[in-house]
Image (cartoon, rainbow, N blue to C red; front, side, top):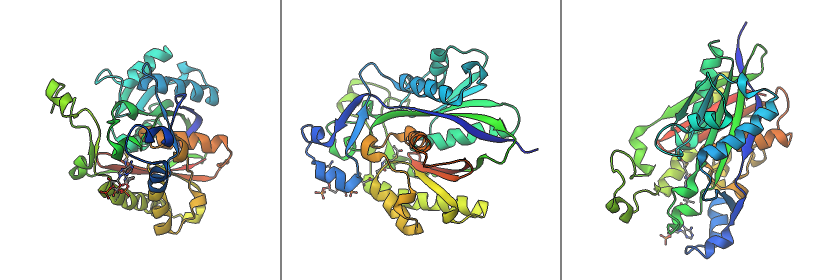
Length: 327
Ligand code: ACO
């Protein structure tokens, strides 16, 4: 009998504070029109001063546990995908475990930026498929508002904060995660990165003066790579599983830029209506973007039992990947 991991519960958390394009007009030299035309983003959520990644992740986890209808004690492991952890160590996953108040499990973080949730989902899927563990909590969370330079208009308009969580459980039916596909190309590491604060350039007055604690991005180059990697990921999943794009009920792409999603749809001849899009209200929430979009799609009944859903993402690393789920 084949064991699959099935998502039995989803939850998300978005901070209360809404930051609109109009407010950004007062912060940097930009316009609502530029942001909307170039990205599709109208507003994004911003974490409060007191909120860190583990707080957002905890709230999403509580919602996912409730949705799944299981007890936190049923969990065997927690995997958190994030590049904006509360601190360099311990892992944000251990802090979520602490906040949930559970013992006798294992918890760790995965660093794959915006592809992080798909990476984490893939790892969790291997644990469950192998029969070693039965139930896992997988979280994508990022708080980019704390690592963007709010005086750099080329990056600060793009990102938002949020968390999405999924509970995976072993299932012997034909529903669940069908396949996951992960890729990376470290040669492109400097297309999107934070230079300072790690062991390469530890915190110092010099580092802060040069603003090395903030995101550096070559947006234009990244745009082209994003379109290609997303197209490749979708094609790979379809080919691997002997499916056509028409067999997929809903495509859930990483929510970076509406123009990226439009370009992918055009290249693969998939109408835009078949893609879940919520970047207009949340911006790019990095590792949280795919699970938040999946959570919304399910609660809005855009996905029903036995539908095929295809998740795909790209991010710093460069990393990219996809997952096919039979809902
Ligand atoms: N407001 C007004 N003008 C701006 C802004 C702004 N916020 N930002 C840039 N501009 C200007 C530029 O200075 C430039 O001016 P110039 O022509 O006088 O030099 C002009 O607008 C065009 O800039 P481009 O960078 O060429 O604009 P582009 O159309 O490429 O859009 C964008 C920029 C939105 C960043 C796009 O390239 C993009 O989305 N790239 C992908 C980014 C991405 O996906 N990042 C997340 C990756 S996932 C992860 O791991 C977190």
